Image 1 (spheres, protein in one colour):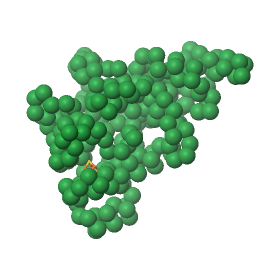
Image 2 (image 1 turned 45 degrees about the vertical axis):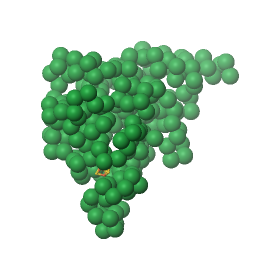
Image 3 (image 1 turned 30 degrees about the horizontal axis):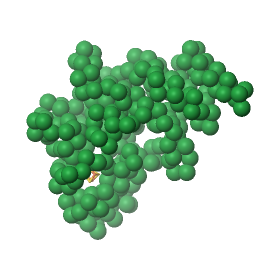
Image 4 (image 1 turned 30 degrees about the vertical axis):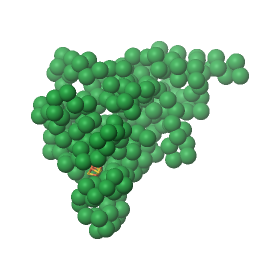
Length: 264
Ligand code: SF4
């Protein structure tokens, strides 16, 4: 047991200190102990992103909907890692500004962002049964729409990786205020490592990074949006509202748990 722990600590140090760009050092999810998770949770955002790609290569990927944290994570990866994967869930109902942000990022970093879209048959069946605007009907139908357009494509994406790098931050809502930087989560019967490198960053720090580095960002942020998803379901904020209040305004007035189901 002690030998195993030392081996894991040794692997972690190697992964942190050797030439990561060659993807020579690998670790299996089963080797990630509480001790390693503790170390990952104390790393800076750039070290954590670097560690993920250097240790897991193309079995790690940044998942982003091209909001502020995704913009920063992609830039950090571009500065610290030679090769990295980025994926997005294209619900086919995104704002034009979000598609522009995806294109701008691909151009700036020479990336091909992997797009996961809803399953054609399931989407067709949902629309035939309930119509395009089912999310207005009730909470269950909104969650069903989110499942078809977001959660299921995200599950398909996660099958291709062991490390899922997300843009969750503690300051986004009460529901997210305990989000760890690193944790093992169950996904379709197997464990994967979920990382949120910017968990401790606040909005001011994110904007400072974006401005100082002159990064392209989703122009909806200049129009009062703070949390951006699909057209209609995400709206601009009135001054003083919590960040996710603009989501699904017609539901959950008292409830801050405005989640689509991807981060259960
Ligand atoms: Fe459907 Fe709205 Fe969810 Fe997008 S945010 S998947 S349109 S319910």
